[in-house]
Image (cartoon, rainbow, N blue to C red):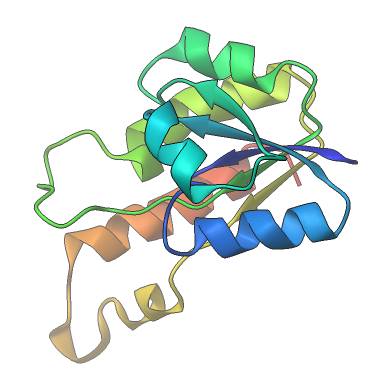
Length: 143
């Protein structure tokens, strides 16, 4: 497996992961909403595919020829529980398309602190999203 689609490549954690994937010899394509910003943040070796997880056609086209997908998804400050979330609606769109495209493996960076959900009466809807995302990926049938 050498061709990886990275979603969330321009984020604080996505950028170093992209660098390490390149060092390891992977061919990296980043699904980005803002190409200009991505060009400034990512190495020249990264192929950019302009698209959005809200658009199934974008996802389907970005997956063409890919062997793996790496997800670095997050909830931005100011997002509300009822809005579109990449770790819920985005995954529900992506995962069946990834299966159909023959994606061999999915990597997902999830917060370890999500495991504190429910401890000492702590409850945050963002952790619910992350736990649901992990479950959706595990249930997708893609290792």
